[in-house]
Length: 96
Length: 99
Image 1 (cartoon, helix red, strand yellow):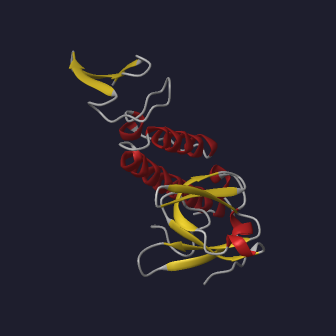
Image 2 (image 1 turned 45 degrees about the horizontal axis):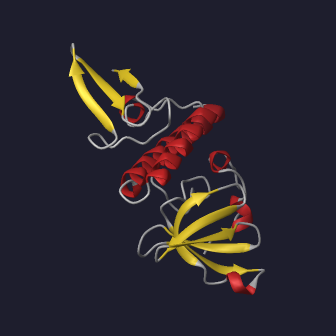
């Protein structure tokens, strides 16, 4: 099955475009770019040749699955090493 | 199918899709950022190892098992056919594999 709203949390986020839409830190809102790397606690985004790091905890991201399909994910749901996320089970989760 | 088998099938499917995405990204990034390509290979391997999913010959031939370099044949890897086997040589670490 392709990447979709149900399995975003388990799927590969590197290569997707992401934007911080909500944050506990006002200055983080609006940080945007293509995901180029991921660690346990943060994403590295690239935009216009510049790299920015966005923490997972405390931020809500909007990922672009396609031009028309965007999904909001609470960063705390994706905290964890990328290889660990694939087995994560979710009962209920934030989606937008 | 039992619940455990369904779960394993789900995980395997996701892992293989993610591996494919990572290798595609590695190819795209290679011209400008070779280190990123190598990092994506590393992530793909970790994914497969952690969840015990075999990569498959197509993917195994696309990176160096010794130094982890992502291969773009002709640029950082030499591919030859010898005695009916394909021989891939990493031009970075000179490791050689026969398939």
